[in-house]
Length: 512
Image 1 (cartoon, helix red, strand yellow):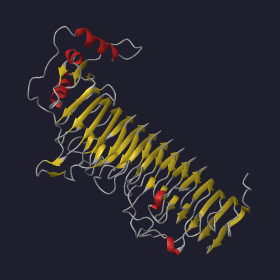
Image 2 (tube, rainbow, N blue to C red):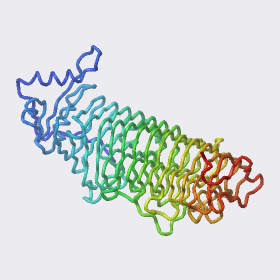
Image 3 (cartoon, helix red, strand yellow):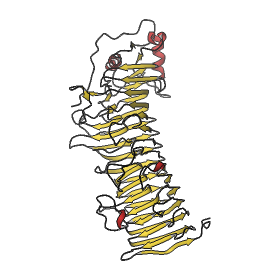
Image 4 (tube, helix red, strand yellow):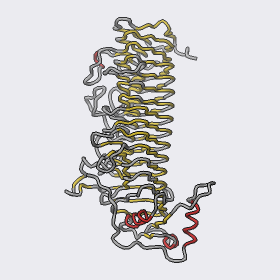
């Protein structure tokens, strides 16, 4: 069981020498709300062991570089609700956890200047409401199961920064962790720590870099209040997660729904790059409601080698820029670049939207045999019609299929552009389900049905640019411009078939 680790100081904290009231007064003044007449907010200053003598002389608490969490925790305990602990420049070596009290702020001088280095299972533990963290670097390593002195118990999920409680603000924090811990930034509903719904947490300008584990991870224990709600990420990045070892074979940059349902997620101007597995990821089973991504980029993810006997939809391999199994998820102005297996992997969409999204270069280094830029699969009935709207999206220079749509019902694909796909087995895009391409464990029994597909396709690398197969009541429009041997092939259409009346097939150079 994870407990709140309120540390008891081993030695009396070192207090501020006399004659430094002026310096502290300046810091308090800087913490006032700009432009608003208000009483000063309480602030206490903690100096790092390697900070300058002048900084130590002006601080309320001075660390010596050993067990520095003791001084930080003492300062936090001395604050009223709404107070701030200001950390100086330098490195704080923490052999235990830091647990901010409700309503307090921990503020550093920026990730390049203030660093918290955690060891001996220490974490930054946000288990009280209304905590703000701002302006420092965190790093954690060497986590073990304290009872056996072995690797960390898989049942005790931890992050170097673990958020259990609601109404938290995490701003301008850069973090890393080795492969001995589950995540750098972890949102965890644990009823033994905080029983209410975990909600209203914002990450702004945060980065997880060169890790041996997940960058940002959501999870939940128990059977009640397991929906994490109203979480926002703005200008955050997960870079090279899984590069320095891997906590498990499925390390992703961002994982928003592991065992938790998710509702009210907002991800804006974020980057996932170089992950072992997916860049932006949801697990299959959790419910996803009202999840919106805007201006997000996912590139060069899926660094894990694919299995030799890979089948489409293999649950042991993701390799995607955006891995989106079901739910009400919207992506606006998002980009997938050079990912290993998929640009956008979508299964069982139920009210999903992709608007003005772009894929390029999927299939980097041939991680798997059949890379797909946009993979849209449906094997379960869905309630919403259209199940998927994909509007004004593009696939550029794919190293495999630019588009694969299989088993999909009530989809609306408008103004889709595919340019210069390499194709697989001589085909640039498949709209339907050939019998040999059904996903692993599939219950799909139809290619595409009751859908509208409008596209502009060009390129000569594959023998067939667009392959339409196993369609029911699908209307096509747009243009295919290619000098390929068979630019469009239609086979095995069922009752209602495929209506190609408004689909033009022209020679290459006719798209202008």
